[in-house]
Image (cartoon, rainbow, N blue to C red):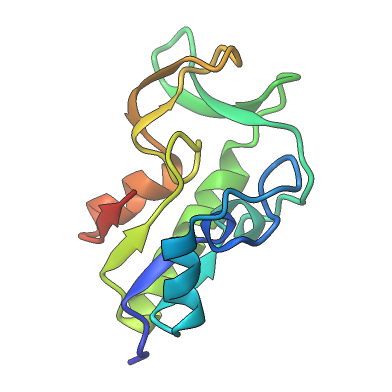
Length: 142
């Protein structure tokens, strides 16, 4: 078992891993990482995507299913699923039961995510990683 209490979205810890090559530094999350209490992860990078990369959002298909698509229409769902599974495996391996995740993200969003129109509008929902972690009993904080 590890000493980590949380996983934290790496962008919140100040790591430049967002789609645009930047971060969304949250001083409290960064402090947890610096203290060795939180492990930074980026599910999108774990899924094989690169930084920078085209922005992605969860879209609903005409059949009613959901996919993660880039603004230009590429289906990147498999990379998001792969990254979510890798993140869950890290939690299980390290005995981590809490996650601090970036809001609105198609990976980490919890409660609200972008609506799939690439217009900046949000809807109720969960990102791929947040959804998988929640279903596995990991408590999500944002």
